[in-house]
Length: 427
Picture 1 (cartoon, one colour):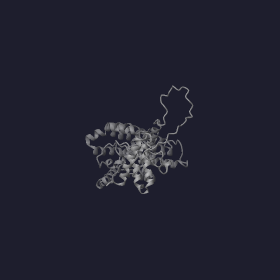
Picture 2 (cartoon, rainbow, N blue to C red):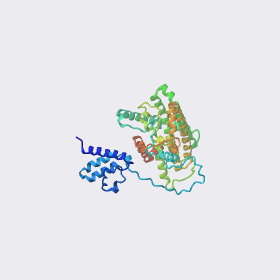
Picture 3 (cartoon, rainbow, N blue to C red):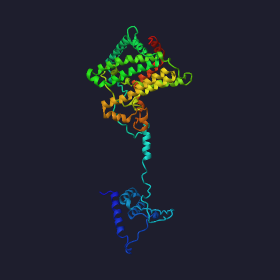
Picture 4 (cartoon, rainbow, N blue to C red):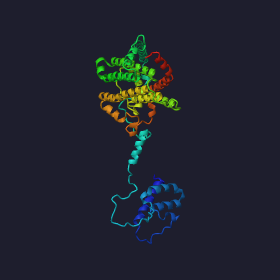
């Protein structure tokens, strides 16, 4: 059984073919002339099959639904009438030289130069706010990463025990004037010169020689005696010299020649305090691996790349410069200037020596990290060589940085206690 829609489709198609064959033939008088369809103005411009379907639907209202289907099936889109395109009269004057054509015709679809887009991408990459900029994978290590799930309680108990033993040995063998050699060491250097500036420079020079010298011999030393034994040797010699330098500076910071006095300036105290606080965030990246510092875990030379390393590849140098400048501005005498010159000079040497050692240890990996970072803070970021991640701030919301922040605040309020402890030593 054929459906009404299919029957309507056959009838419309046959009438369309017949109308096409007789389009240009003369009219036959023997054939009856059909009455004009209803609503002629709406159908006179339509194709024959579509016009016939509309006429049938008007004549037989009950076939309205089937005729709609017939219209869609019997009338392709190409047969629909097309409105003539309006002729646009150009107001452009005729060309002076009509036979000369430009080498590149004007087109509205011509591509614009991409330089502004590249500049925009470079600027957005510096700020890290463009989501289309892909984050480069780290070649070095993720600094300050602290996974609590990987920590062992036994390791931290061992660390606490080692720290207590080290402090006890340091007090007995070096700090205590009755048993230690710290005062003897300071007296020997004071006998070289009565100038506190000279003694300050000598203390820093000795510390820098031992500290940087042993660091340069690290690869050889670890092969001879092992990583843990070399770390004990390194800390056992560097720590007493560092304590002597700090204690002497505290006890003699007001000696020498007063060069300026800015402590009465209202805002200078806040500026110095803020500079000191920020400097400690740069000074102590060694807190990233405290268990290795105490030789609980096997020490190794790290190639850090994230966190503070994105700002500067040598944060200890930057932090030391900030600390020295802040204290020199606040104290304003020749001893502070001498201490600052010695400490900054040591850390500048450490920049060169540290890069040299990392290049020997890591080779091409260090060259990649070096190309992405800078010694001067923020230089690589401004150059576009360092592309900050979208959530860069999260690299600082970690336990090591929070620990440094707490210790820095504690050290600020503990200044009177440190000064009193240094005065009792009489170094």
